Length: 513
Ligand code: 6LW
Image (cartoon, rainbow, N blue to C red; front, top):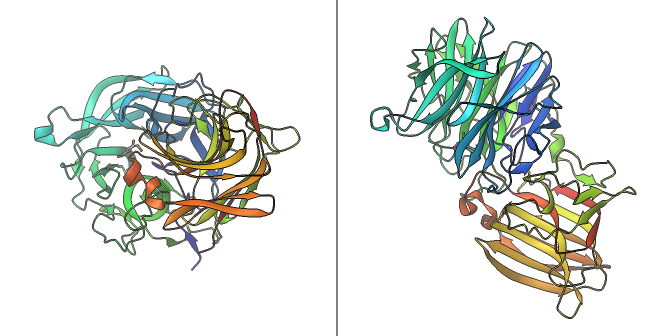
């Protein structure tokens, strides 16, 4: 039987939401303070995905300035109805929902509309289009009476598609199956005349789980599916390769199957650095409701392919070399909190120019920085960089970036006497530790970082000579250590009052297992 490898979207791709139009699948994931925001990916087979655009691609749509990397755009839902794509999303501040936004587009590659602000509290908004054309908005929020109902509640209001505003009464749908934990990530589906409400409970960490309720009428009353949780790895031991499974969205295929996209992580010795990733899980509808992974009850690293497609390798396991020959960096690259077009721009002759900015990586502004996800624990990221600093405050280089408080830099700069050098620095919670500095003879060098299960190791090639500056243990960059919701990114950056750095190429190379 042909198989595919999970996760189908490796590295930081949390909170997946999916819809299908004909033979085309579209998926969005959370992007937090990265900009452009809310990547939209396209697939014909559910296994191989290609980025096609972003929902947030103009700074006038959303301001992310001042936000922690793990705030910003959380847990969007994408739906298609009568020729229009709809995305609802939370803008989070201080780890709480602040505003709920709705954007629309005729083409999921964009352009997307300016957002409409919905009068909705809480997080994890979703839309359900019923057979009669009415649209129902759901989200989760703090429960009014947590001592009675548990901490969270799922609620619903109608969305008037003419005025793009919520209308009519608020319906409280459900408090979850487990009650002890917040209930979130609601999505409603209709099957054989029954409304199925799926949710996530237990939090996005080890206790994450998919639970369900059902109703005869869209607004309820909803009764708990007694099989809940329907999908979880909370009961699995440390040897289980995939953990934190939950936050699903369902899609029906033209071949008559149903599949779920789910969030999960791949920890190594109890910590994870790649972030929350997107896995694909088969679903079978039974009279009792959806059954996830009917053969095993588990999200597996190797799964049978959806009916109607042939097995294939993941192109995300290929080496990617970027010479920056397109007018803009490829959609895999993102900056922080706003456009960096003025700061980081492909050079007409190829390569990338980084105009140094005084905004440091430690700020909550928009530094001269672009990054792509780390998608494999074992990999090498390398870049050829030319930069002549005139003072030690000017630096350009490669960064292993978890967030503005937790990252490492391998920087080309000068010492106080003006001698070019490469410096390795680790930053954690505001404290910078200079781990190594090596003088170099040429200001055109290759900077490289290798990672594996134990560490990230940093190197420079100066002329024909490779020098290893040092290693930082892998858990330093983990979510367990740094907190938050994002995975490690590999970035190119330049900090300082003046100067330009030139990147000839960047290469990301997964090590073959
Ligand atoms: C997301 C929510 C969650 O909105 O984390 O804990 C939030 N669970 O479902 C950010 O990804």
